[in-house]
Image (tube, rainbow, N blue to C red; front, side):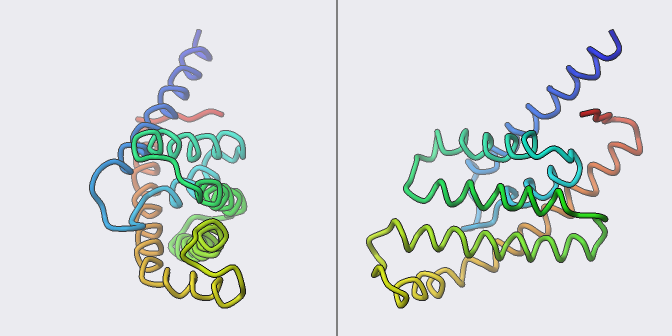
Amino acid sequence: MEKFKKNINSVLFVTFVIFCLSFTRLIPHAWNFSPMIAAGLFSGFYFRQFYLSSFIVIFSMFIGDLFLGFHDTMIFTYFSLIVAVLIGLNIKNLNFRGILYTSLMSSVSFFLITNFGAWLTLEMYTKNFSGLIESYIMAIPFFQNTLISTFIYLFIFKIFFDFAVKKKVLRISF
């Protein structure tokens, strides 16, 4: 019975996280200022399960996309979030330095992957090297929000999770 309660609590926690992440996409926010990359990093680091961590982030995005609409670059966005999960799985220590480095790595990979996807699928760019470079240059103003939000949200996730575990409010056993 105790194992059943732990499993139910774990499922409820993951469900709660998914719906919270989905909701953050629906509330007004600055362009690219989102917790999704940080959620990929965080879930990869703490859950240490690729499929569970990927499911949390991708399903959260999908629920948001049901309301916001689907688009041609979704696959690139989803893929970049899976890359964030993979980076999170390889974090040894989530201290300030780890948060800084992984935020930078995952934000850069998100920038490179999603803007490659924009170049590939959108008609606004010529399909040559010049068009690819243009797509990256046009996206530079959005990179700042991606990097800052990833750093801030990852730091907040770590603080809240450490507090919850310390106070025994949350007991995760996956």
